[in-house]
Length: 530
Picture 1 (cartoon, rainbow, N blue to C red):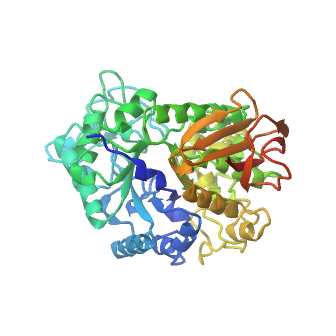
Picture 2: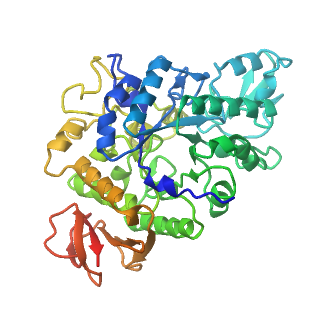
């Protein structure tokens, strides 16, 4: 029976990177009690769901994406009692909790792997991929070979990411049973959904050289998430999103996932991860329009996002994060979050956070960028290498949230946070933003309030206007009762004409005219049409 995902359009998800959100015990690391203390703030933004990056027990070689116990909380973040209190407090405020499901790999400190690496005869040996010699020339995402030698068994194990993150062998039915039980453990606790980390990696095809999107991927996803008692659990996958794969994974008759992230618009403005290239927001617009039309045609959910923990700030790459930071941040928010889909807001983007600039490697923690530095040291001039890391490091969006302009920025009472604050935290912090005449967070509140009030902005259809006009994004969201016009000008001031007129609902400028007329750089306006 075809199931409607219509209720998902009411979600506004706020993503939290726990170690950087709010520290409650003065150890310099954010924690669960810190999150509890800020639930009212999250709700005030209009968010009604929280995605928590991993809080499970972990050696932290990849900041929690190397899990050593899926059923326990890492002491850095608190205890299981703290989690239970967070879950209860969030639910009391109408906020859902979405957990990270990391199933392509475990930590090398996980009990399964400690047992597996001890002997070929160990029952857990078959939980991972082993070979007498590297089966191919695959490279780890974090640098170096994806195969690591294990002396105890005289074999190599596969790790698509860090050496401390061995890939789990999903061809083993016992592994699939383990992960089904882990999902059920958290569902029985009351969590509301899962974000599935690099989910397309769980099926591989060594003969064809495929480290992801193997022949059993959809079979595995259905086995875990297609079970009837998970029907009301929200799921979103990090996976390849071609038009074919999104239909295969998220079709409403597939019994797999409700949604997947689509990241192609986030690749604009850079070559690889560390090299900027010339670009314009029109390139992003074209990608967004293509996916709006595709998901609308096939009745699929679409994720609306510009930022997360794995990317430097979109604002710094695609717009003006200096003189026009307010205009740029609010324009991007209107252009993206008023489309049809589920908004995902990453902590800090609602105050216009921007990339940092550090002149020494000691200010970085990201295992990925440190691996990039190591691989290129001596090949690229030191100054250029640091510039690349400042541009592309994931640490840009992982630095502690600046709640105020004090020395510790309201994040911790410790002398030093786990990672140095963003270099512009004195300027860019919540307290300063809320006191400013040009408040980005205030615009976010107004935008999500409008989205919550207007059914057309949640479930209405999408129709682009001014399709061939450059340097702007103009579209209508409508249903049988209302039509709402969204006008977002981009990098250059220009005149926009030929638009229907209506009542102004929201703007990031003091517009003196209607929808038609002159628009400043990164000016946006939203109108209710007759």
